[in-house]
Image (cartoon, rainbow, N blue to C red):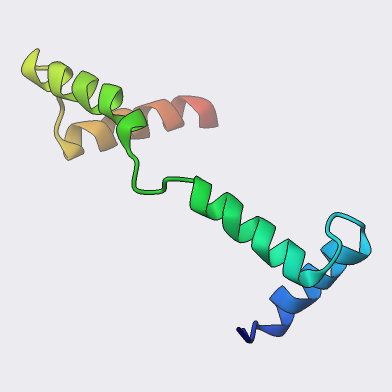
Amino acid sequence: MTITLPREQQEWLESQVKAGLYGSIDEAVASILAEHMRLDIDDLSWARPLVDEARASIARGEVMTLDEYRARMEQRFGKLER
């Protein structure tokens, strides 16, 4: 397989090999790709508790409009400027 990378990426890979982190560019690409594949990017299960808490907050009526939020932030930042 032949892959053409942008110069910046090629140079970065070469620097990684030169630094001794990988034995070759092929090894570097294989290692980096394997690590990326281990990351289950589509797994958003970590967010479930945050979404559940947000929904519970809404159910309790703990909400504000965007205008209310902006007014609160302006007030807080105004105190910092003094």
